[in-house]
Image (tube, rainbow, N blue to C red):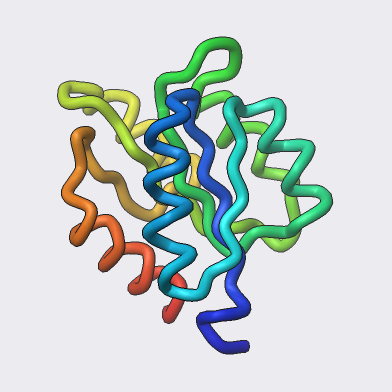
Length: 123
């Protein structure tokens, strides 16, 4: 499977971030999906089976930790990169225990985020 066949799901309650990330990763040839909250994302995962999820940790309703807990039963388990606000270290540690592979602090450097996504999708 080439990188162009990879599916990325962006889960963030901020519309502007979802649009930015869709634009960036679409240019790389990825198929990019968007979900505005954890519940919508869980429903989408059953249909699209993403290779990688970019997950905002602070969202209304279901936060990133609860989302990761519910993701545990999904097979195959998609890779997860979390996006957090500065100072959420306890949340980062919990998310790592639940399977998140990396985290980036908002506001993130788009070059750094793109590099991490490519690294995770190649490995």
